[in-house]
Image (cartoon, rainbow, N blue to C red; front, side, top):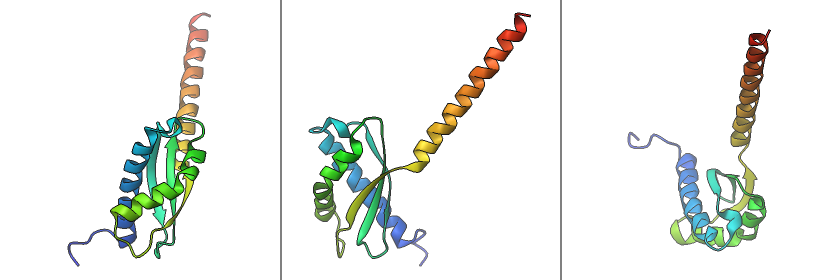
Amino acid sequence: MPGRRYPRTARVNEVLREVLAEAVERLADHDERLALVTITAVEADPDLRRATVLFDSLTEGALAALQEDRIRLQAAIAAQVRFKRTPQLTFAVDPVVSTGRRVEDILRNLRAAAEEDGDDDAGR
């Protein structure tokens, strides 16, 4: 099939990510814990029984807010996408984002240490 470059699951995951991102944005108007939440990816089971929503947030309480709004988010999926079944959602902080932040912090600390060493050598 020349028109299909992505496997079905990847396409479904992207559609779910888009729908959930829009729904979270609307919910953020009423719940400040969701104001700085970014839906980074969705990993749905091939049978669509379950889907894990990966997110990043700069605010505390985002996970609790998402869990509280799980039914509303599933309803948004059911309303906008025609699937045989709507997946049950679970939420997890995206490990890629937190790993990237950790690497950035390490590099920042190394750069600061190198600048301090350079200043110490200049004063001798």
